[in-house]
Length: 111
Image 1 (spheres, rainbow, N blue to C red):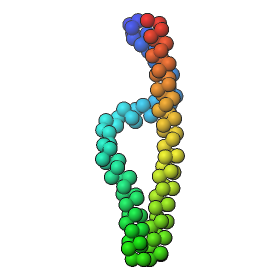
Image 2: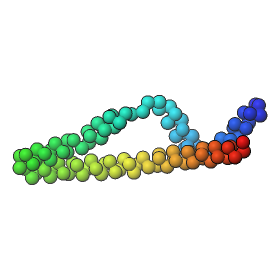
Image 3: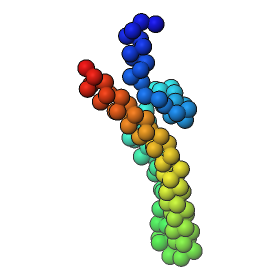
Image 4: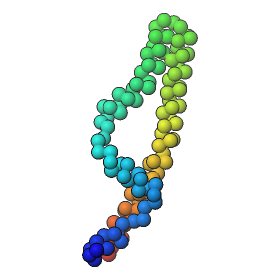
């Protein structure tokens, strides 16, 4: 190894095994979902509930209106759960970027 290679390796932060697996997983995912795709996939959860509720209003059926309201609440709770479940992944990403930022700041002061 040359001195430049050793210096480059010394500048890299120590990542945990979980952080390394996150880096490899994100690095392997080369496509990004468009905003339209995310909007339509989110609408798939809420539109049926809204349609059931509108039918309940149109038909005057409190039973259908209640079912629409219930399914809307279940969809909302499911959305909160998925956000809570993915919070750990976001924290791992923030830890990686904090380490990279610290390494870049240390390298710029050494230059």
